[in-house]
Amino acid sequence: MTILVTGGAGYIGSHMVLELIDHGYDVAILDDLSTGCSAVIHKDARFFQGDVADEAIIDRICQSCDISAVFHFAGSTSLPESIGDPLRYFQNNTEASRALVQNLLRYGVRHIVFSSTAAVYGATSSAPIAETAPCQPASPYGWSKLFTEQMLQDASRASGIGIAILRYFNVAGADPAGRIGQSTPDAQSLIKVACAVAAGKRDVLEIYGNDYATPDGTCVRDYIHVSDLVIAHRLALVALQSGGANILCNLGYGKGHSVREIADAVGRAAGAPLPVRNQPRRAGDQAIVISNADLARERLGWTPAFDDIDVILKTAFAWENVPAR
Ligand SMILES: NC(=O)c1ccc[n+]([C@@H]2O[C@H](COP(=O)([O-])OP(=O)(O)OC[C@H]3O[C@@H](n4cnc5c(N)ncnc54)[C@H](O)[C@@H]3O)[C@@H](O)[C@H]2O)c1
Ligand SMILES: O=c1ccn([C@@H]2O[C@H](COP(=O)(O)OP(=O)(O)O[C@H]3O[C@H](CO)[C@H](O)[C@H](O)[C@H]3O)[C@@H](O)[C@H]2O)c(=O)[nH]1
Image (cartoon, helix red, strand yellow):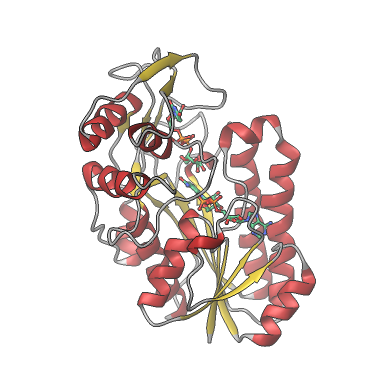
């Protein structure tokens, strides 16, 4: 039996493929390479290039591989971008996921693990955020993922397919063995940009807002190492395959770091202070986003191995600090 990883040429998906192949699974990847990178596609995975919403390509994959489970990472991922282009987010995250699930159900796929986000909680929540907090997304990105969560839960009730919905906080870092990292060419996430500045590929780190109600005025986020994140995904699949109930849980470390702290720490990792420039607030940002991830530890038996911001930044910078990347 083969595991299908959508978005397996992207940042998180490529780390998932590595984790699965390291654990002896057969893997197929479906990716349209819209933001993914062919250089990170694992040589031992079968690669299909195309859109997850395309019925014909799902037919081709399911007829040539015996797909038992799907990790669904493919999607559009930028919260600020979604504010300017909401319809693309609802199309590529919600509608494309609906088409994918409908087509997969025809082939008897039994389990789906879905990439959701802390952005589903939005403005109304206090920190740390547990899964029981109300969901009031502050962006089309958050809504597009929340709608998909609801759709998956309803499809599961109707069809019996097992689902795990994992709400990630801020994912960062790279494979500690240096095999892959975040290769998305124009990624705008804080740690990616800060490491690019430290590696001399960008001139300055813009800090979006220094007047928030936080200790140093900059936004606080809960950064989780990508390798811990994908381990939790593998454990979620094992739990579903063992006959466990559907899963909905946060993935984070339950601690926060400010933008300013990250800038200082990346400067330390790189051996020179980072040039920074204060800018106005970015639309859609919350001041503080920190998880309560107790449920993931209980339900999945997950024990993070890289819960250290310096390890996250060291692996991210080591990956970025190669001129060709
Ligand atoms: N990076 C984070 O901090 C974070 C946090 C929360 C949730 N997520 C979610 O995790 C998932 C992966 O994010 P990432 O950071 O690896 O992003 P990414 O852009 O690196 O990866 C997404 C991959 O999906 C592919 N893709 C996009 N639309 C597709 C489509 N319609 N059909 C086929 N392939 C398609 C892209 O080419 C890319 O390879 C996304 O669903 C994202 O919303 C990410
Ligand atoms: O160059 C930059 C980039 C980011 N930031 C700031 O750094 C913080 C983190 O921003 P990111 O863009 O790295 O991450 P977000 O918190 O906006 O969003 C991330 O985490 C969310 C979950 O919390 C979503 O899932 C989303 O996909 C993912 O990009 C924000 O305050 C942002 O304004 C800067 O100051 N300068």
